[in-house]
Structures are given as C-alpha cells and as structure tokens.
Length: 591
Image 1 (cartoon, rainbow, N blue to C red):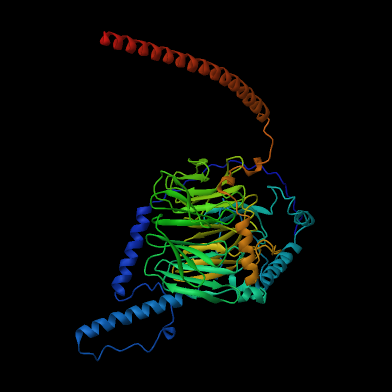
Image 2: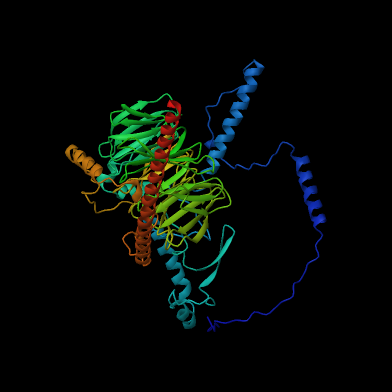
C-alpha cells in the first residue's frame, strides 16, 4: 500500500442535503398489488414466522380423524394445535442464547459498571480477534503503527481508536477494544464452585408455601428467624441447619425481630405483639400496642421500638416490661423503620416522601428531611449516610452530619428493600431482582446481581461475619453468596458466633449490668464530653441570682416576723377591752 498521512485534527466541510423526490404511495400500491397476486395463486399458503423442521416436532400426538363425537374432536384439535404451536416456539427460541442466571445486560448512564475476570471461552475469542487485527495491521504503514502504539490513557478524542458505539439506544464514546465495554457478572453457581467448604454448607434453598417470608439474623449471626405471613414461625441454626423450634400460629404475621440473643424473639401478629422462647413457648403478650407493622430492637438500651397502623412510635423496656415513651408522628400509618447502629436513633419513612429522626428524649422529631415527592418505599442507614428509595424508582444519598443531599440515581424498578452489610456493601431488591453495590457512598460500583425468576423478594438481611445474604421470598427462603460482605476478623468478646451455653448466660448478665438508660440516646453523639464555652458565664449568672434571692429572702423573713408581733399585740389589746366591758356590765346588773 502507498504511504498514508493521518491528521489528528480534521475540520469537516458543510455539505448541502440532496433531497430525492419519491412517491411513497406508488411504491406501497405496487407492493399491495404483488401480495394480492400471490394470495390468488396460493390461497392456502401462509407466512410461517416460526421456521422449524417438521422432524423436530412431536410425533406422538393423538389422531382425531376417527373420533365420531364432535365435542371431543374439537377439543382435541384445539389441544393438538396448541401443543404444536408451543413446541414450535420452544424450538425457535432455542436458537437464541438464553441469559445465564445471575447475569443482566446493564447499560445505564446514571449507574456504574463492574468488570469481572472473563472465562476461558471469552479469553479464546479475544485471542482470535487480536490475531485478526494483527493480520490486518501488518499491511498498514508506519504512521498507522505509531497511532496503534499510543497508550489507552493518552488517547485523544480525534484519534481513530475512539469512536461512538451504539447499544440499546444509548450512544457513548468508547475505545475500540471490547475489554472495557463488556459488563461481566459472576453467577451464583460460579461463586459457589469456587467457595470454601464452610460457606458451601451454609447455603440452602427452602421451598415453603406459607409466604411471603421475612428473615432476621441474631446479633452474632448464628441463628436465623423466619416468619411467613400465613403464620409459620421457625428458628434455624445456620451452622448445622437444625431447627430449634418450628410452630404454626393461626393468625397472620406482620413482622419479627430477635432480641439480645437467640433465646428470645418478638413476633407481631394480627393484633398484638408476642414474645416467644427459643423452644417456641409463648412468654408474653403485649396488649398495650396494637397493629404493629415494623419492629426494631436496640440492644444496648434493651428497648423494643415499634410502629404501626396508628403512626405511634412506642419504646418499650424489655428488661423491666414498662413502656418508656409513646411518640405520635401525626403522619398516618408507617411500615418503614430502621435504626442507626452508631447512635440508636430511629429513622421512619413516610408516605408523604419525608424521613423523620426520633429519640425517646424529645417529644417531636429531631429532624424532618423532605427526600422525595412520592411515597418512600425503603430506607437504609449506615453510620453517617442515609439511603432513601421512592415509588418513582429513584434512590438518593444523604450526608447526615451536614444534613445535605449528595446524589440521586435512577433504577429500572421500585426498590422494595435495602440492607447494608458490616463492610458497607449495599444490597437492593426490586421485585425479583437482587443487586449489590461496592463503595456506594464514595465511588459506586455494581458488584453482584441475581435474578429469581417467578418469585418476588420480600426481605433482605446480611448474615453478620459471613459472606451470605438471605432472601425471604414469596414461596421460599434462599441464601446468596456475596464475597466480602462479612467482617473477617471476629471480636469474640463482643459478638461470638461460636459461644457456649455458659458464655451466653454470662454475656446476658453483662448486657443487663451495662444497660444504658434511654436518656443517653442523642443525635450528635460526637458532642458529648466537649466543653461548652458559654457554660462558665451561665454558672456565674446562676450564682449571682442565687445570692440576690437569698438576701431578698432574709429581708422578707424579717418583715414577716415584725408583722406577726404587731398582730399578736393587737389581739391582746382587744381581749383586754372585751374583759373590761364584761366587768362593767356585771356591776350594773348587781346595782
């Protein structure tokens, strides 16, 4: 080839549009005429949209020619036609590559991308493509090789390696190599095969018919509490997969929570709240609180918080059994409640798009954040960050320290549940789709996705100290592997998943002795212990007022004493006068 000269900056010239005069009606008329002619020639011929070989179709279908009963014959004919049509559709669809479980084509401008190591087949395809490129580039000149040798990071917008790719109606500028454009997801099967034996044993899939189910783990992550809406309650040991208790309640169950350890758990039934033992025995029925929709337990304060139909937030002390406070939110029924594990503040999501923060020390809400214009579907709290999701398929990030909005994203469906792991991995559930993000608060990256076809997700909960997330579905309970979700280094003095019965008893006593009063729950915990610069002046003013009050009191006391003496003298004088009068009267009578 002759030598080529390539300019990096090219100024395109404006060219006038050349319009072609075409009569569209004439073309359409001719097309319709040809179709009519073909129909007249072959009236029985139809366009076959499902091109399938006849040999592949089922041959054991019944023959209806010899059947004399007309009703039976017509019904069988319909069934045979439907069977042939469905088999044709199945055979036609096998030509297309089906999406593997756990993989989703995901090209969104708002949300981030994740790149996972490719499989062996994909690597082989890449090598073949690279060889083809090398063959084509060998014929090119030195100038072209110079352009090819430039680094990917140093590419300008004018080089030939950058061009616009069009995928699913979204145009974006990208390099020609497909390594950076493909979105690869690791399926659950691939993760399970590469996981260790210990985590493989903890993965299970239970098909149940009393759902939809909601799942909650104990604080140490050893036990899993499962409750179905139709009245099924079960407590499972996740290490051995043995059920500690399983029983049926003849009422609907709204929500559940585990208390300070696995020995006690609370269940909200149709009208009242019930507390059960790990053996399934009913310990208490709380009739003061009606129609609760959500419950959260504060372990350091031994407070069970609940909210329900009447929009009343109730704090109940479980160690004593008394209700500490009742807060009226005045925003109607509420079912979305989360606690901040850092400062034990309760977050409520309301139907008017507001999120309110509550503490038992203050009668009104500490803070009222207007997050969305539509009702809130779910919220998530992690240290100093808040995630709010709404019915309009948007979710937003908020900084609680500054009370500022950070960023908003758009999802493909309504986010029903949000849960955050100990390592700040964020999980969303949207109908039948499960999705996790890495570094959502700083640099968001899509991590793991999974689809549960035909089974709606009702609840999500990460298992503490394990790379497992349990899903409470409509017809089953399933666990998914999420690498990096659990903390690797376990502090056994704090929450020990391998504790013995003796350690359980000792920890329970320690928790009761170290129990914090409800007054310690404050919004800005960092301010506790700081010196108030205005405190000294305030104390001085108090001392001055106290001295002034003491002097006034002394003067008042002296005046009161004098008044009392005068009153006594007056009384004595009056008594003497009365006695003199009586004597005079008696003398007159004797005369």
